[in-house]
Length: 276
Image (cartoon, rainbow, N blue to C red; front, side, top):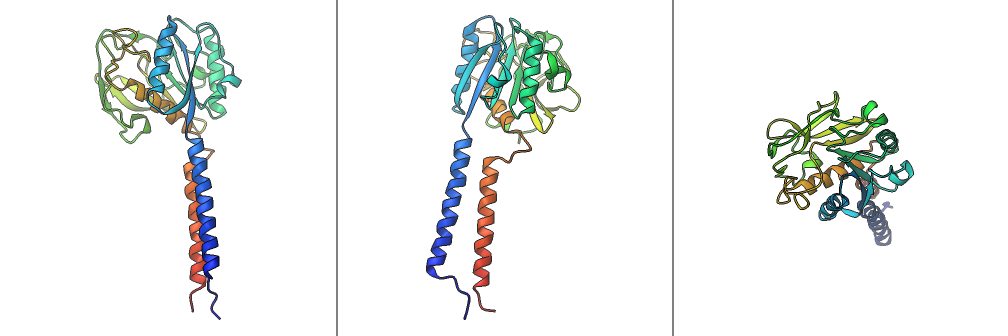
């Protein structure tokens, strides 16, 4: 007698396959939305709010919280409630070394970090985030006064550049004059060849350095032009850094792996039912 799969058994297998696939895909959907934080030290609170609004406007995040890093330093425990954080300065950090140490610990624990001007420029982070090689642009001085736009995209396939076709830094285009740290990768440049987006592999993760000032022309006319895609670039960088944990498979990968295993099992069962 042939070892046939009965209609009932076929339906049962199909039900199991579809049920597990749905569960895996539900897991993917549940894990996809990201909550992030802006850790900023600007002179005006409204500038942090502007960055928050630009990130929320991309629709990528379930929430965007703001921390005033000029008056205090978020703890590692606080950071760990977020998938990624964006760090920038101007008025100066309350404690740049404590913040840098906490950020390094956060990356080591799997968190995503994006650092922007002036934290990677003239009002720099300190602590282990800088001394341990987590920051892709060596913080030193700053320059401004020449309006720049998006230049060469060296890695068009990078998720950080997805959908980003324009960036105008505004009439000041505030940026770091620091060099790119050895081992880091320049994803995109300003039009004059200065680095704009830099990624750094560190302990199985990827951090991001952005060479522009996050507040937009909505709060001051010489900041990046809101008719261009600075908000999307920051959001993509946060999303990318949050997902760059090599020791944990992405939910989508888990779903595909599960479906593949189930499909292989069904295929083998069908082959076994055929006559020799």
